Image (cartoon, rainbow, N blue to C red; front, side, top):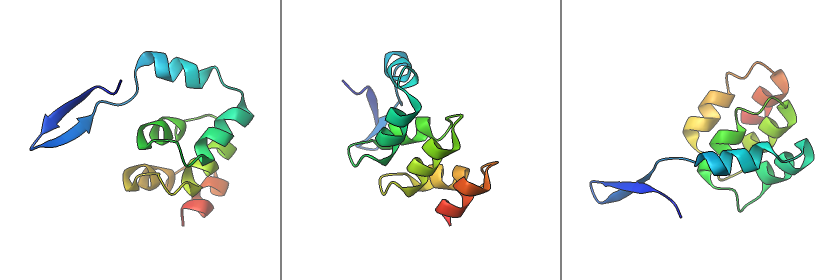
Amino acid sequence: KKESVKTENKPVNKGLSDKQKNKIDSLSEEDKWELAQSEEATTEILDYLSNDKDWDVRVGVATNPNTSVKTLDKLSNDGDWEVRQYVA
């Protein structure tokens, strides 16, 4: 269940629950990379994965069409050039 609040008749998601974050954190690097590239990944999941320690997971986020502009903007300033080149 997504927790949301309505603002001007538009639902606003509060982000991922701690349970969801823990589940993602327990995935292997390869599984996180696959999730980051998945068309099923929500913007909330992609935003969370954009903070992953592994640059290749962040590249997966940068190349996913579901990634929000806000998350892409954050990744455009990533410390790894590999990630930044995929945002461009």
